[in-house]
Image (cartoon, rainbow, N blue to C red; front, side, top):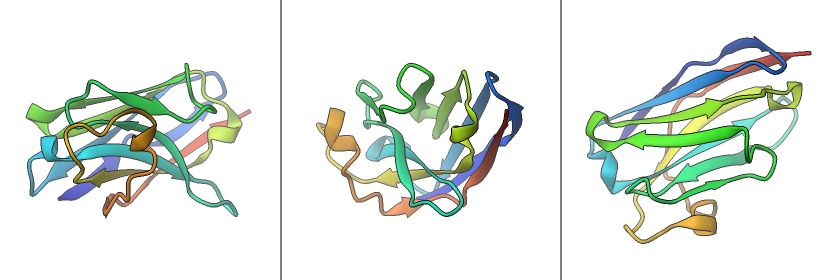
Length: 127
């Protein structure tokens, strides 16, 4: 599966952005999807994930209550709605896919291998 992330940009603290990840080449419902981010000088970190059906979502503590992950399997798309953005959210955001079982959910979504990655989209939050 090929992934293309978009929607990044520059926003003031407290603002919102919506990231999108378009998938092609394979049926998206075969994959759990995740968002990760990497800030300059830091390791890549998990942000959020959603299972194949969309019925289970899992978030990093740092974004819980502010970010919402969703998916539309019919449109082969995954989104990350980011509200109440903070300067520490500044990073390159990546979407990723893992061909896991239908039943993988909750905390297990963070630990998937995620074999497929998009190219990343820059999010910059100014203070």
